[in-house]
Length: 434
Image (cartoon, rainbow, N blue to C red; front, side, top):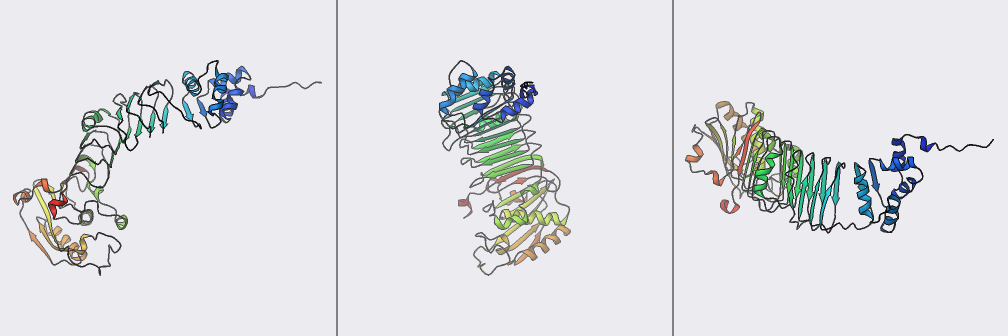
């Protein structure tokens, strides 16, 4: 009796056939699709198509012929995927893709789009109801990007070193994550547009040279990172949800203001175990003011003072304002003293901490318990301390009356013990100090 041939593969469910075809090189999967109507149906309805290294320029036309009677290489392959509602399209090919200078796309089903190191485009615009993630990295020559994707949740743009590309994502009202590096964005755009993204939680800005007075207001913003914006002079942040602020660059702007009831002032303090490998970020800071609730625990007060002095080695005045009362610490140093023999700390650091050169401390308006805690702390920590004195002035305006202007200092406001109300910092010009 003759053995009847049975096509078992064709009897498999479509998801299994699609999984098998997705494991094949694109060229083989395309050829498999013409063997039967069942294979063709499974392939055209597949949610994922991967163009891999088997799709070289020489075989592109051949593959296109297998897909349709049209020719046009990779353009037809992409159009085919879009027309068939493909949700994931991954290009991993070994040839140069040269898109038109002005490219406008409409993606009805794709959820994630990544374009990296694409050359030749000058303007890129696309619209989509399905897009969730878009990444544009190092697309040389790109001058303008416009995105109309109301459901977009994450957008990352990274231009080249000399990029002058403008970015418009104002129609993407569902953004939760926004990262712009080497983008041509302005102070006015950030001030008037960012607050409209009511779901935005993470905002990152890097190497945006047009920014000078950075003013951002967004109630939902939790994380803000600013790095290497060389012309930045002032930062103002208003967010009731902010809990992380990161700044990276050679110099801090002359003024920083943060308002957030969720920002903990002790977040300004670097962990002790990491200080040996870091340089103080505010070395030239002279005046520092903290506004908010004052610590009630002695260990919190000591940790706060120690951390702020580590961050700002040459503080002249450190003051705390709660209500209408101001408590201040005034410092005098002997910066010329020889410290080669001091091996207790900082022995491997080019900048020595405040402990080596602090010679006098004046404590103003602290109560008896706090005064005792501070005297004990400085006596134990300052190697060359000569004197600790106590004064009581009582007024929160005492520094202003003595001629200490906020224009020549630093002001940080924020809840110290519970949650921060605000953080503001003004920095002295080095030329003003010496």
